[in-house]
Image 1 (tube, rainbow, N blue to C red):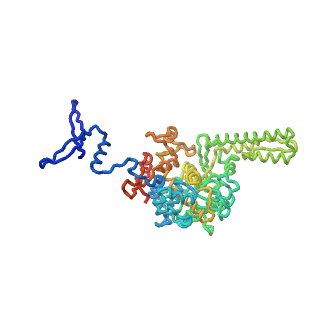
Image 2: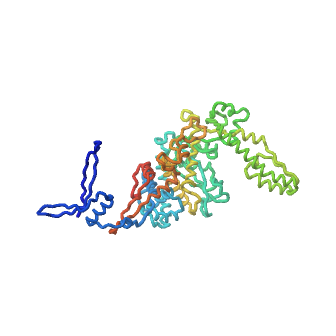
Image 3: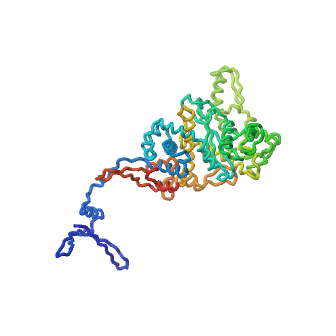
Length: 586
């Protein structure tokens, strides 16, 4: 017996052609040397699946219940590590790290893990066995000693890695402006035996904790190029001197323009920037862009100085000169939005301080608090809360307490609200005044990278390593992961809340604005296909649901790797980084 499928067609009364298929259960037999067919049943009314099952049974194919046809022997998250690995391969990161081998695979796995699921090294090592990264890179089951050896191997190659990144992004061809951004940040350590650990100004607000400092060098768009780890009590100017030496001598870049904030590029550092050891001028002078501190700005405004409010009646930016800064251009900027915000904040803090002091004044008047020393101790606790003590005059006796605002000092500070003055030796034909302001404001990209490294994406802090080289390796891994993240965020902008095309402000002093498309994203929350927009971390978590399953079919002993059916978002995420969804990483 067999199933016969007969296809036919006919034309209906409206002239439309209609195709159909008839299905019959037939028995074939010979009669006098001829093969004849006997129809046993008309199966055309049965569902297609039922006819297929009858046909398979007649052919001798064993039929099993759907739930028993296959067995999934294992299932590992795959999509997130596959996407990060694909971007790393596209950027040439494996070759950048060093020659192929066990240590490079471990180092690459550490960088990819820092992007996909940042955690301590011990947690990362156990996590490798739970995702396809461990099996595909051969790092599952790696020992702690192997991981530490890979970190030591990586940090020894740091100079070569950073030199290659500098050639990609800071050399004259990719960076015709010859500009580099540099800033310094800090993170606290757990433990007390690291040689780099020291007490210093904590940018994390962790008072009493030992810390390290690290300076990040980027191109004008914020791509990380190099990082330097320094003792926790290192000042900004010393860090700037060190990075200039790296850029000039190790990277071999001449005539660069270094951009740094007002606390980093000081007058002393400027004087030494282009001097050789014998005191003579360097043949390849570096330019720089930085800002003046408040006392210097106040001096420019005093006694009919070159900086007057009338300059900003019709504009927010003006170029001035001063004999105090020979050979330099001064670009004065006034941001009215920032001025209003600072004035409001100052008044709020002053009012909050007065509110805290009111109960103390009442206690003194009522005689419940007496003695100049006791009153002074209580006032000291309160008046430092909002750091506004410099704006108050406090008079204390054994039986009285009076607090008055120093209005003249408040007014002097308010006169500087919204003002900042940039200084640079770069000639105007190379960089006009608006370009100077835009270059300085690009330091926001380094601040953004610090946010990604420290908390948003890569979780650098706190640092648990004890040995100096391990701390340097940890920060280097985070910098390389930030380099990957920079490119992934840009590629995945259509799927996230990232502004794909931020508008270029006509006025470089004006606050940055999001594009209408980005505002629409935030408002609608979903794209035109109804898919939700996600954060960068949320998109990685969604990609992690794309799993690789090991499937064993009934009656066989071998397993076959198969991916789960990807969602449209997962497909587009891989399309945006220019690669098909891979079954394996290597």
